[in-house]
Amino acid sequence: MSPTRRRTCQSLGAELGFKKAILLLEDGWAAIQQAIYTSGFKVVKCYPVHGELKVSTTKSSSSSPISLDAIIVCCKRKDNERQKLNPTQILQKSKILILKLESAGIVLSASDRFVIHASQMLVPLSTLELSYEEVTNEIRTLALV
Image (cartoon, rainbow, N blue to C red):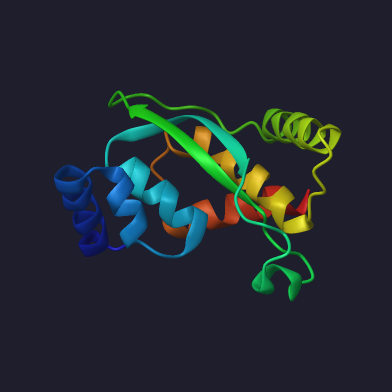
């Protein structure tokens, strides 16, 4: 993230709260991580929730529609607080969530599974000072597993 963008994100986070900063940034999950981190927050938990009807026009035209959103629960981060990235643990949490959703009769697309994996990665990633590219690479690496 460029110094200018970092300052913008920090000022937006301070003035409007990190939620507004996330809405103003683009570029997906890495931008969400950057907004949360630079605003001084960390992700405590992420919950996948059913977001839209699968029969909507945009969903029915996609081969792998996204029907899930993520509720991201955050709190203020301590300055020296860091979590280790543990891909095995993240995948286990993701698999548990996937099994719970599927056992409830929800059919998940590959994109829905990616939403679950990426949202679970936000928990440790939100405590690490990483570049946009590093976050993107971490999320892509896990998505390929």
